[in-house]
Structure formats: C-alpha cells, structure tokens
Length: 289
Picture: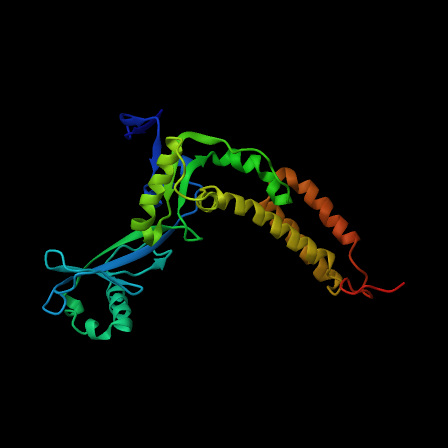
C-alpha cells in the first residue's frame, strides 16, 4: 500500500496503485529520482483579439501555434529552451514567438497587437533525451543495475527485472503531452486490467522507463572497448605519452566502474601494455611471413 504523507508523517492519501505523473518533480521522489528528465523552458503569449484575428476558428500550427480567441484572448506559443529553468516572462521569448509566426504567416503577424501589450506564462516541460515519454511499470533501480551489470561486458541477462509493486510512471511527455498522455493512460490501464495493449510491443519497448538505464550500462561497455582499442593499436605513441594514456585510462575506469572491477581492469591494462605493437609494425596491415 502506497501512502502520501505530510511533513509530520500524517497520511493524506493511500492506494494500492500509484501513477507518478508529476513531470520534473518525479526526480524529488526516491523511487523515481534516477529517471533522466531534462527541464525545457516554454513561454506562451496571451494576446487580445482584434477584427483581423477574431474570425480565426481553427488552431494554426507552423512550428509554433496560434489559437482561436477564447474570451477575446488568443494564445501564441511557444518557446523551447532545453536546460533552462527560468520561469520569468521575458521579452526575448515574446520576440521568438512573434518571429516564428512571422516566418510562416507574415501578413497575419503584422496584424498582432504590439508586443508591449502581451501577457504571458512560462513553465517547464519534462523532456527525455530521445523525445519519447516513459510509460509503464517502474523497476527497482538499484536491483536493476546489479541484475543487469553484465550488459557492460556485452553479455545477455535472461532475467525479468524486479518492479515496485503497484507503481507506474507517465513522464517525459515534453511539448506533446496533450497527444501522448491519453495514450499513456490507456497503456497503463491495459496493464492494470490485464487487457490487450493499445500499441505494438516495439512501441512498449520504446516507452519502457528503464530503457535509459540499459543504455547507460551498455555505454560503459562501449567506453571500455574504445579505450582497449586505443591501448592495443597505439604503436605510434611514444613511451611517455603511452604511460599518460594508461594512467588516464585507469583513472577514468575507477570513476565509472564498481570498485570490485578495478583489479580486473588493471590486469587488462597490463595485458594491453604487454601486447603493444612494436614501433616497426602497424596493427592495421597484415604482415607477410
């Protein structure tokens, strides 16, 4: 049973199933703090309608957007600034939104009221690095990293991850929340009720919240292999420079790998040093006997 507590540990809500759908604030929760989410600033403008804009009955989309008026106010948007956490209204973003409209519909842009009269709102989106949301059951992060640690050595692990019981996420929708969120809700509802999923398995895999953890584990393998290749095929490197390369390699390995891997790494480096090609040979050319 999941519980929501106040600062004095008073229970304000409890449920057997919880969906974390609180955008960047998910990184403030222990169970989901390891999910990679990038803040993306966005600002919209609220502009008063006029005789030219008032007949607009459909949303105009052109990279930005301009809505029909509601209570005599149009919405013009929106800026997109990754890793910017400022939520103040800025003239720069108003200018950006104006120029975006002006690039595609210059005649209409000329009919907008002066920027000095615009109101606005700025907020932060939660974006993933691959621009797809994270949807579904959430594995236990520490167990996941230990269970699939062999990924960095290029090995397969035929085990299912351990999940937090009754815990799901719907995060990272970025600027497409109105499109993605309803489908994400259907996916989670289908899983909870043991119904057919509304999307193909490959889509489910693409939305899996743990996909970035898998990439991080495999990235360690790629990093390791790149350095081993450098060490093995570096016959043109002078001895002093070679020693520097080995020292840097060992230092970086100590930073990114578990302490119990250091001994194996050191042995690997020594082997690479021993197998270093002589100055007179090239590792890229097959020598005839």
